[in-house]
Length: 188
Image 1 (tube, rainbow, N blue to C red):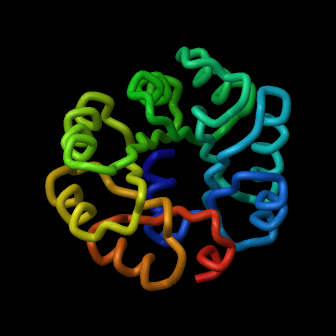
Image 2 (cartoon, rainbow, N blue to C red):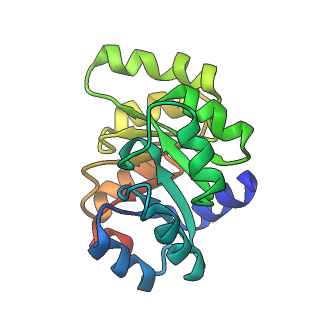
């Protein structure tokens, strides 16, 4: 499954991210085959994932943002077995390791806002071995190029991706894909 999702992202490098029901409604009609689900709760998550699957989309759930899921690895188990997501996003390396054990596609998310946070990306990613790394904000070409050159793990850039030039800069710097909640970016 990992190879299939990576291939899908290579072919469709703009990933739709949805943070509310309005975004979900819009993405169901969009061409985006991979969707980052950034909202929901224990009760709604299985239905949200099912809606994406019925629309022929891959559902990658940001477990840290789902109301009611704990900071314990059982949150990953729930996401895999009850919600039946295709993958997870998390800032927690333990979630990434558990997701891999459960057969999920895994994305380790980092907020890069200074040199210290940047220096933590490589060792944390090396320890967790995610399928991909997502860095936010995604509008830092020099940082993207540095990470792309120093890690074998493919990169996604998210946050503040607002237009075609942001997408092109991130991809040119070495990102495999970008994620955005902007419907205008989804249509690029």
